[in-house]
Length: 81
Image 1 (spheres, helix red, strand yellow):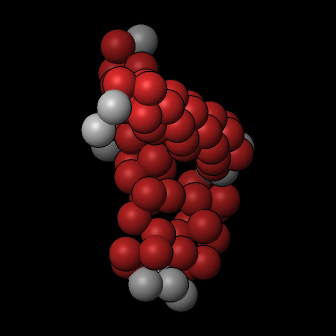
Image 2: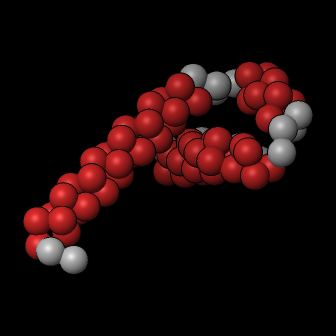
């Protein structure tokens, strides 16, 4: 493969990665709005209607957000079981 083609392929690949990261950040921000237990329970019920593979990214983001909230709560001395 010629160098100009490799450079073009690299640029296209980086562009796709930027687009994916931007979409991931936007989805994370939207999911962060579901904070209360009732909101999360409702969201979990909705996600339960779909195949695990189809909702894997959403569940991963929600789990990470839950972890961060718990970590912050513990660090601030507000641990609740």
